[in-house]
Length: 435
Image (cartoon, rainbow, N blue to C red; front, side, top):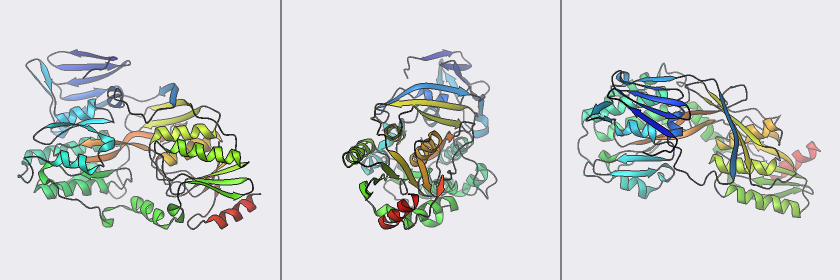
């Protein structure tokens, strides 16, 4: 591992990593990992870059609060040790501590594969990771136990949300599937899938099984979902706006609606095209429709905000485990379009779309109409488990208000509006009422 800003000091008993005045201590004698801030694991892996942040410049960052985090490895039956003057650490734990959020390493029993986590939904990538001489072999009990223990470590230190209602602890969720985790490979991976969806977190998902199950499929059924996740799915099914294509529609002489169904790398270009059209057609009022937007990528979302405000963009994020509150101030290279803006939001407005709504409302860039947003303030982290399964979890990095209140559960609009069957004609009536 190379990182220009990372200092490494080692002895026979421990390794100390220092980054930007923060330390991570891997104590092989006490079997503990101590970090000034748990976000240090993300910072160490910052050097691999994507183009998601293109066009966005961070002009200020400051952090307040927070405290040290200690992981007692003995509690999770994990161990780091020294061999011939070098530290030996399990691959899945090294991924967690050093790889950041974009790239990881997957071992399928035959080979090590570098993994771009944003490509993991591709079937061809999954097939490459699952193809192995281990396929359909019995899985050693030690692999099942290590996976079980690593899941508990993830949930207790690297998952950003609370234990779901009705569960006493993360350990109790795992214990419900203890026998399946130590059974056949198929039952093992099915147990992981059930455990992840028992969190009742729309951001958390089971992505794929590992090499022991080969090409076996693990379909998601409705009965696996908790009440919060079901509400989001069912709200989406009811929303007629989910059938509307992205883009510009004139609603009145001076009012246009622009539907954004997701935040992707193309979204800023599409919004810019629509706003330029609005200029040509002498629009004054722009309604940005996020009612069926369930999120996407943060960088393009920040860029779209840069088109509806001429101010800097300020966001606040709280670490759910160490309590630190970090404020980021951004500028974008996008052109500001000086219209009057309104947002339409619903229970389906989730993740990056929820984040967009929070910033626009707080900064006064737009008036928010509709229903309470669906929430989803935590960023998402991808984790490779010892048995080769891959899951995604809400991370400890959670959208917050300026006073540190986490905004995971959604925010209320400025003006309530029933949206389930809102069509163009009803929108025109609503605009008339506004006037």
